[in-house]
Image 1 (cartoon, rainbow, N blue to C red):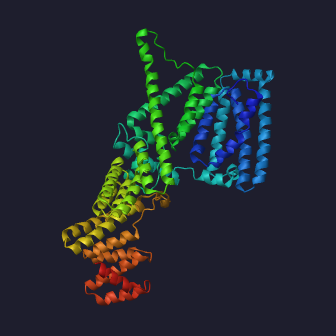
Image 2 (spheres, one colour):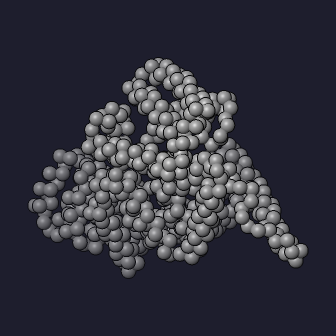
Amino acid sequence: MLTKKDISKVEIFLYAFPLIPFIICFVQSSSRGMFLVFPLVFLLGLFLLSFKRQLEYILYTLFSFGPSLLIYKFMEGGNENPGLVTLTVSIVLFLLFVFCIKYSISRKAGSVLFEKIQLRKVSKIIIPVTIVIIGFLGFLDIKNEGIIFRQLPSQLQTRLNSTNIGAATAQERLIFINDGLKISSDSPIIGFGGEAWAAIYKKYQHMPYISNKAHNGYLEWLIDTGWVGFILFISVSIYFFWLLFRNYLKQKENTLQVAVMVSTLGIFLHSFLDYNFSYSTIWLVIIWLFVMGLDKTTGIKTIQDKKFVIFQGVPLIVFSIMMVLNLFFSYRFMTADMLYTKFKQSKSLSFREETIKRAVSYDPENILYQRSLADTYFLKLRFENTPEAKQQLDDLIHDLTTLEPSNSTLQLKAGTLSEQAKDKRNALKYYSMGLKIDHYNKKLYENSIRLKVTVAIENRKSGDKKGAEKLLQSAIKDYQDEKKWYDYFLTHAPKEAERFNSRDFEVTARSHYFAALAYFLQKDFSEVEAISSTIKNNNEEKEKVCALEIMALQTDGKLEEAQALLDKYEKLFPLLQETIKNMEHLL
């Protein structure tokens, strides 16, 4: 409504009608990042506008935010009908108000008055300075939960109270930045490629969170493209902002340039707090805004000399080649997606195998397709059980782990498939590789410890005591590492520690049991007793560890203590004696 000097009634309606619903949605989003960014870009826009436009800007803001917060309060209380009625009435009144403002300002007497005021140099800073003072007082009121704060909807009050550097989400962002900079330091020049954070962050994280995005567009750009790509991105962005500002200074009626600068800057500032740059829609909006705000000429002089005509066509040729490549790969990705859909819908193993193989051939770097093909090969091995089927599975598992070697999820998948295919040697290899790059994966620890102890028992029975001892020591080391990282998390996690353990990392009961089994086989009975006291829940693993504890006392000749312990534990586990017999048979 401010970007045109002469605006029609239809355009006023189109701009004003959705403003109140938009503000309601903005408040409902509860985006603490935008609650911080919006006041900054609002004030910037206010400083850049003329006195006349500043006045309009303030009036439209007041008469749109006021009803929006009132409607939000109705909605918060569950009063949908009063909210709908208030929304309709507010939109109609706001439209009338905008028409009245536009009419008053456009009148000759009003225009003359504004022109006289604008001739004074201080006129442009009167309203912004006033708003800054009011805003500062409002900030103090909110910080101290004063009169204005108490009038706000309760959910908004809660959200504003949690908008500070000590909040869990703010601490989480700082953790992401710390881990992201460590990632970048391993490939600082050219980065790791697109979507690198999601593939490798588990290798670098020092808290057990789950987040496939770094929640910082600049950090993700740095990780993906390295300092070369990052500096290029920043340089181009600054150049376009400079062109916008230069156009703002050149244009007499420059409200459009102000609107574009403020809107684009809002996106770029909020990208420090979220992953806006990951969405193609956001880039469409950014490019659209830049095009709106720039002149038809960029200020770069066109070279007229015929000798350099060929160089003027180079960008067009490069762009055309990129478009052709884009169409080519887009077709392949689309075809792969269609084949994957057919794969999911089919129940025929042979058809599924053929279909997913074709999908992989069209998009060989898609992890989802590769994993689906691996599952298909495993089913084929179960039904056919031929050397060819086993070799197919082994080759694909190797390709899968080579494709993203720092992806611990793939290492876990490879180990699980190998173990299910009765290839324990490769399973142990993949579990170990996974633990080298991910120290917060409880399933990797559990599978690795369990399989090592199980194979060690088999080796002892076959007479390979040296191999068994080596595996038992390795299992115990895995267990100690798991405890070490869990203790590290509990010691170093910020307040609200559960917010930073979305991976639900812990030393599992099965890890405790198989570690106790490893200690028992090494005759380290004191550790068996320590593990028994560590497990709090009365589950199956606890019963087995209690059985090992009693067996340890019996082995040491402490029969009376063993009997006393048996009497104590039998109250919790009535079938404990049967469990002890099973454990003796196992060992």
